[in-house]
Length: 101
Image (cartoon, rainbow, N blue to C red; front, side):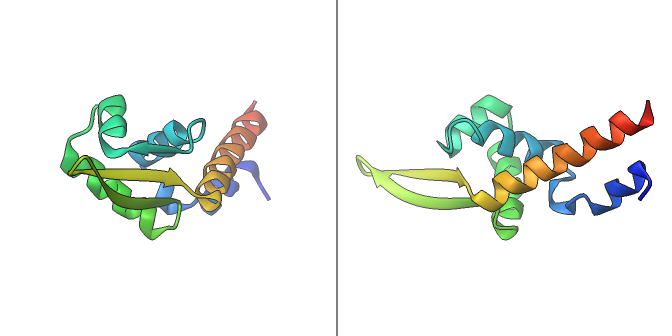
C-alpha cells in the first residue's frame, strides 16, 4: 500500500486536534477531572463536553461522576482502546511522513 493511502485508515473519531490533545493529556496520568483537562487545554466547558462525548462514544475514554464534599466531580479516564487508538493514529502518521522523504 502506498504510504499516504494509510491515512485512509485513520480513525475518524480522532480527526480533531482537541480529541487528540485530550487523549495525549491522559496517557501519562490515566485519569483527570473535567476541570484539570479544561484548564490544561484552555477549552470552554461546552466545547470540552462535546469532545468528551465523542471520545466516550468511541469507547476511548470513560466518564464517571462522583460527589466529593457535596460537590460534583467528573473524572475522565483513558481506556485501553483509547490508548491503542492514539498510538495507531500517530504510528500511521509517522510512517507516512517517513515514506515521503
